[in-house]
Length: 367
Image (cartoon, rainbow, N blue to C red; front, side, top):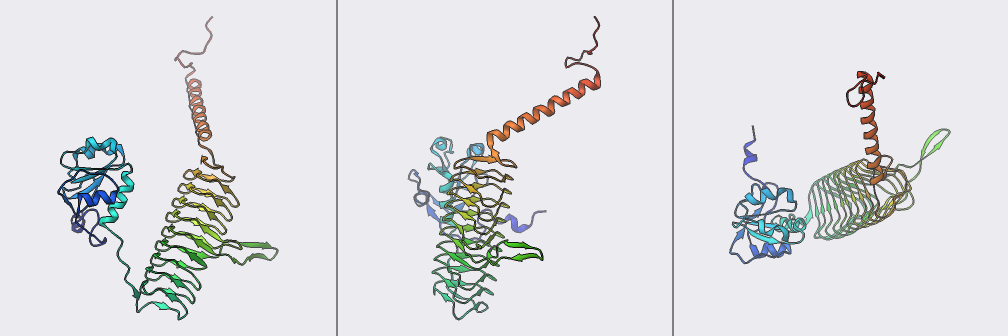
């Protein structure tokens, strides 16, 4: 049986999300960077096409949901120009070349991030040598080490640990239970709950007496506008720094080894792992559960499929899948050949079992 609370709110449940508005159609269109006809209509929120009400905004970005557009009760819909004619007469078409990006802006209009509440919670532990901007928010039971620098309007969540000497730019958001050491952050960096940044890399020497840990003397550099997902781990460098380039997005449960360098705007999906000293160029995309061995060069704009095992350099712009990873076309040619082989062997077994040829006749010579 559905919990009664689940019936009380849809998108943007006010128990969890700040809400602003209502806004006019013109204001929503401006936020979307789209165009809409003049209409005296106030919009109070956002919702998917299937459940949107006449005072809510929705969007269509994928044509396979066009039937939902035909039936929607939304008061306004963000659509590509190609789909504007299909918007029902009961709704205002807000036309934009990039509906999904427009949707992101409109959602942020109605549901902005909660404001930073400047101050240090009484239960936080802050070293006297830490430098904390007066506009920053330090949550309960957070720990701020000596010589750490927390920039303007940063938010540090409950139980987060900011190690000694960490430097943080403006408007950073550090989630609950994050540990952050040996790191320098740019502006607007977001680190989600449970992430571990700056711990020792996996470096050791093999000796006759056993393993001997090698001191990890590098740092982690998180450039501006980087986002780090929940429970992701980023090792600091051994001698060189580990670098996550500006604007890159790391999903939950990603592992980044020591000395790894990501270029600008990279996307690393959940459960992927990158071994030490591998370098990714700008705008590389790495699918879920993909694994990269160490000391590789992945060229600008390369795309690596889910569960790929990458053991060699990948040139710029290449798309690879499989384990070991290879170009997409070569991989699927091999898959097709394997399927043909299995099919043909199956047919051969059937002929052997029945004593007949493919047309059902026997193979016996009667001449």
